[in-house]
Length: 271
Ligand code: URA
Image (cartoon, rainbow, N blue to C red):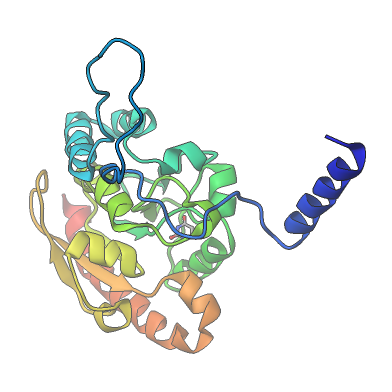
């Protein structure tokens, strides 16, 4: 390649970076778990001996079944983390820098579940350490809770960052859910808070948007749970950063969480 063309290409790349394009992405989300599309034309005949056809890309259901088996086999949080790290059924793992498993105290009474890591979480390998996380910490402090003091345990539906912070596909959520459900069964929180629509839809199977779902306690049941867990959907801190007017609703939800926690703490102290 000529030197002039090379430096032109370098300048074009530098411009992309300056504009904030830090990932090589396609215009549309590629569902790499879906079955390979049918070929429109036959491939040209090859002058090689016939061999068995290569397996087609695993359909989403295969990856979900493998996720379920891997998650169920994990008998501790450490084993679950290792199972996730070894799981190759979700392409997000290939573009992420770190697996983001959890933060806080796994024996805390409250488990908070977000959507998935952003850029800072991906760099540090911890959930909610970027701008949303800083707001979340302030929200928790306003009702006397702190992740550093071990009052809460925090995780996400997705343990890997979707490139460019795009929304996760349904297939990505479906393949990560078995790990999240096992995570809940192993941590056994007394209360769960769902931050935003992705965890609310994924775990509660709800169809409404989060602005309708928020503020109403639900019971989350499932395999491995001794009893249904009271679960409160609320607004995601990233949404609150974009819509400060909605902080009032989030504040009401936080007060509801504080009241519920206060009602179970004496019971917990007795046990
Ligand atoms: N948003 C989330 O949902 N989770 C994180 O960890 C960070 C931002």
